[in-house]
Length: 261
Image (cartoon, rainbow, N blue to C red; front, side, top):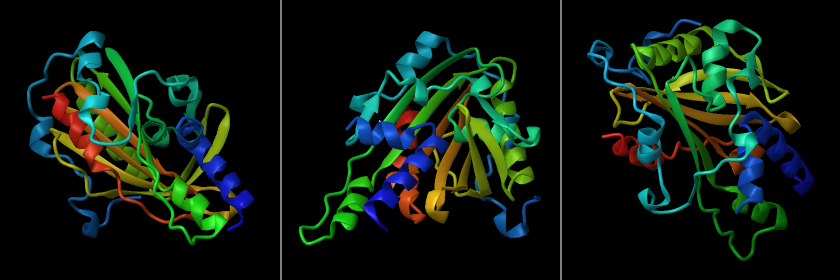
């Protein structure tokens, strides 16, 4: 792929992930039986008694900090492109709205308090004999994750997880949504294996129609601990340019969920 094509594709995918890519580069149907267990929450957890919603100050204290990670960079003050309001994200099909929010790291429902963070991984170092195009892709081979923490009262946290779960089932064949004025097309969405550390969690891989006919993967984890829901929306910059799959950086969700106790 030519460098200009790589650049256009990366920028297109960045719009889909609310400038996840641009800021990283600039700043540093029904489920089938075979899908049973994938990304599913523990049903017993949903029946647990509701816990008190954390305040904004408590969420701030519980949010990921630089000292909590072994590598990469944690940002505590996000640009507007990484911190969209709920009214800036709109799915064409209302049934897909919870999933559009999750892909955009926008807290759904009516949270009592919210806090956001982002984490950007370290770029890979290209080999000395690589071509300029390969070197560019190697430099983009890193993940960026938007992290949204939201606390809820009166069972709101459990409802958020249920709504996202339902949206994945209804919108698995794809849907369109607008984020910050940019229209985006998701080709498909499917549940995958959710990371541990939460009372219940969903993991989702969505495929975005990007530039140059690239089908770019996006990863989302929606996890609940008590009355708090944490949404992790991740992209890999090189994957956005090539369409290759990537692994969700579970070390980041592990670190964040551990801080919630």
